[in-house]
Length: 193
Image (tube, rainbow, N blue to C red; front, side, top):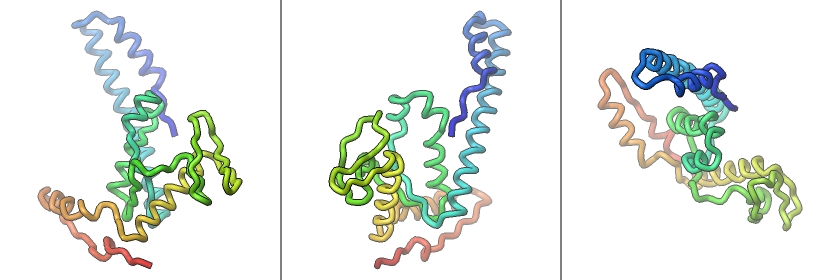
């Protein structure tokens, strides 16, 4: 999804850049810009909540990769900012009952989901054709399948992400007034096999 900056916000920025520093008009424009940004961020938060709600209610496990979003912003700039993909990832960590996080340095792009052969791809190449098994996938779909398989193998091996931080999280919530915390230890345990 994409929530582009509104035309009104761009126009306000234009007027703001031309206003005299220290003038009343500049202060008024700054307040209007803040209000527009608040509307923009509310739209993004609403979309994040809807996406996360859909994923957490329809799937028992949610698998995602811990990517370095800041480096994406350096490469792609405003496109990444307008999607707020980092917000979805953070919300999944908080709200999913069983979030499975694949490590940042696990190779997923350019890996054939059928035979796990690595094929070097440029950013412009959108299709992955495996030289060993001759299967053809869309680059993003292949990567998603590899992330899913890797996450499920982590889950089945008993490496449930978040187990180490679970007690610290409970302690944090217990320190907040008017919050009751209960943790189901059976939900954290994993069956092998």
